[in-house]
Every structure is written in structure tokens, then in C-alpha cells.
Length: 640
Image (cartoon, rainbow, N blue to C red; front, side, top):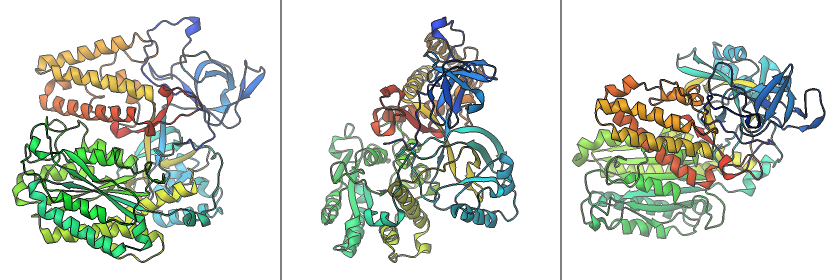
């Protein structure tokens, strides 16, 4: 993983602070941001910012553009700065050469498949002008075309246009700080919309001619089937084998056949409860590049040998199989040719719902929302073929809700219910799905697709999203090279689609701290059974905060009436959380509400612990950075 900007960043440590701590002259702390009690003041350097040993003194060196620094003192037009809140300041810069950074939040472009490329404007009023234009879509299309052609410099105060290809911030971290934001309503639909002032810097280097890229790289597809191999699934596994056999026969010996590869994982349930199940999950055949896919067909044939024992309960541990497919399948082909699989798909086939993370027979405490977010971060799209058989009628609504949450990618849903468990309908949908995914290779090669766009539905848009991500990687696409610009988080022409996602830039140490905090909150919450115990929960939390406040490197507001008030850096984000806004009185009102919040915290904790152990998540912002200062662009929806 590499950093795409010529930026030298210090360790960003917005953690928990106790302003009551008395510091010595040798333990100077940054200034507190105006209007807050616990947040240190930080700035971003403009291009060409020089560091001096004192105001109007000697030049020491220059800072890279948009490097975040803490402010320790002000003197007329000068500010004293340093990269860390606990180290001594390292020099002075002119205040006019900096930009105030109120939160450590950044913007991340979503994949533009299915929406228009977005424009960045010089002012918020310029952005609102477009959003309020009665011919918005026509004007937007014209301005994007002109900006892309380089013939509209300064037109309507446009400073940049979103790149055509997609840059995955998790795979290739880029920093687009959000300097300011305001919340508004979109004049077209009155949906909530976040107007953001973002900043970025020129890319560091590299250019590969677009004309040669497709010749140098081959876009390929990896499809991993997750098969419920319990007794009721035997006929559907046989049909899956038939669908795959037909597909393999069609593409065998062709270039398409070399670019579409498969893997298979079988799943059942907890063998600790029922040893006769033989396995909870089993990789029947790994995903790898092979010229002959018959071993995959044979592996599905093995899966037809379904479990002889009955599972504990109707639901199966399908989430364990999804987790294995995300984490254990060799999508990067590190054990093969080292060339990562480009388009990544998981097809889950089951007639049962997933085990709830609270179920004692579930392997993991991670939930569907967290798994979906982790998969999407790794550019993996999950699809579910849900067989709604009469035997599971009481389970259908629960299972559908969970699988719809799991089977999302770039705002699109890939949940395919098979009513009454119809075998002909299942075979038809499975054939359409597999064929549409192989069409993704045909389309990018300029060949005709086998099924038409109407029949493929949103699978066409999914293919476009995967292709844009691949092209962005192949061509080294960068975010726009702008100094400042205003843009909406939702597509201005279609507010139902997210265009730029705000994320919190956290260090590994910060995530470890949040994980420890959640771990203790879950423990406290589990111990609070009655309403009186629930009231004591907040007393325990205050005690925890007081303990944390003894550490001069941690930042906590002691007097806060909500947990969000204690963690002020989260409270000020454009993000809402039940737990952060919870008061002592509301916490005591409902045991059911407390149960839901505690379960949610436990699922987030499980995801944090996974991320902390996954080196691919973390990026060093400077050479030689200590492990704890590696950073991750954390989505808001997985915050506490």
C-alpha cells in the first residue's frame, strides 16, 4: 500500500485529553480550538510554507503541502507549530500560509458507476448555484465535459472535476482533508446533504499512457460460491453444479475462460454443538487462476454430499463462510502469480438465515453491516441467492433483512430471493447471475455480452464499478489536484447516490484505544441488568473516563453529560450515534434499547480487533513511522 501524495505527515493523534492536567514548561500542549473544551488546534500547511526558528527569523526548511500541524502559540501573524501534541514545537510559520483543520476528517470518492462525475467549485455559493439550476443535469454534463477537455478553466468557478476512474482509498490511501462543512437540504428532493470544502495536493509522480494500459493488463473475474451444505440444500447444490458446468463448457478454451475463475466454500453450523456436521466451514476449492475449471465443478459435486446431522436451529452460520471468503480466499493471488484478482464476487446460496452474533453457536460476534463494509473496502461484492422455501416461512423476513444488509455494494443491492424455493427459478437466476459476471470481462474487451442490459439489471452497473476501479489502479488515477473546492457528499443530480464519503483518519493507537473503551463499555453494560444497575453504568463510565484522564496523552472531558461529550472529537463530526448521544436518563428507560446498543458495540469491537491485526488496512504516512502511528480512513458508520 502506498501513499499517493507528496505529503510528509506527522502522527495524527486526536485521542482523549484531560485539560485539567497540569503540564510543565517541558510538557507544553497545543492550544485548544475555539469553541471546544478538549480539541487541540491544528492547521494544514499551504504549498510553499516555510518553517522558521522564530517569528521573522531564519528559515529552517519548508513543509510539504497540507501537512497537519498542532498550534502551540500565536504571535501577531505567526504561529508556533509541531507535528505531535506531546512533543516540543519545531518552529514558526506565517498564519497566512496555513489553513485551519477543525477535525481530522477526509473525503473519499465513491465509485462513479451509476452517477455523474462531480464538480468541485471555488465557493459554496457556486455549488449551490448548480444544485438549484432548473436544468441541473444538462448543465452539469456540459460543465463536466468542458472541464475534462480542459477548456473551462475558471468557468462558473469550477476548480476541479472528479476523475473518471475510481481510486479505492483503502487500497491506495489518499488524503483529501475536509476543511469545513455545512448541512443542508437538496433542493431537488429535500434529502439531507453535506456541503464540504475539501483540499488536496498534486500527485507525486507517475504517468502511464492510458492507450497502452488495457494491452498491458488483463481484467479478470473471481467468483467464490458459498454453499449451504445442509440436508435441505441438496437439490440446489446439484443445480448450482449444473449451472457452473454449463458456464465452464461455454468458456473453456477461450480467452474469456482464462479470465474467469472460481472458488467454493461449503458451510454448515457449529460442530461443537453437533459433531456430526463434520465442519462449520470448509474451503472445497480455492480461488486461483487455472486453465481448467473442472476441479471447481468437482468440488461442488463433493458439496452435494450434504450433512447427515441436523444443525442446531434453523439458521446456519453463513456469516462464518462470508468472513472466510473475505479473509482467507487468496484474492491477491499471493500464492499464485501475485497479480490480484480484479473483479471480486461472492455468491452465497442458502435457504436459511444467518446466525445472529448473539447466538452461542455463531463463530464470530461480527455482524452483517460490518462484514459488508469490510468486503466493500476490499472491492468484494457479495450476492445472496435466498431460497425462500415453505419450511422456512417464519424465517424469511429475518433472513431477507440480514442478507439485504450484507449484499450491498456501492449503494446497490444484490439480494435475489427465490420464492417458494422454486428449483427452475433458482437455476434461471443462478444462470443469469453467473453469465452476467462473465459478461463483465466481455464488455471491457469490447465483445458483445451474452445477456442484454435489461436482463442483467444492476449487474451492468456493478460491472462498470469494477471496471472503473481496475482502470483507476492500472492508470494510476489520482484525486483532483486542487487547493480548495466545495462539493456535496451526495451526487448533485441524484441525491440517492453517495458521491464523496466523509471518513475519520485514525491512527492504529487511536483505534486500539476505541477498542479498549468499547470492550469496557460492553462489560459494564452486560453487568447492568436492572434500571438501577443501568444508572450505575454511567457512574462506571465516568470512573473509566477519570482513569483515562490520568494519562496526559489521552483527551477526555470530565464534565460531559453524554459519552459523546466526553469524546468531543467524535461529537463534532457530521455523524450521529445512539451511544454517543445517550444520557443517563435515556439509558435507564429501556432494557431492549440497552441490549441493542450493547450488541452493536460488540459487533463494532469485533471489527476493530480484526482491523488492528490486518496489516493491509494500515498505511505509514512517513517513512520510518512507528506502528502505532499508521493510519486508516475509517468509515463513519463503524464508529462507536
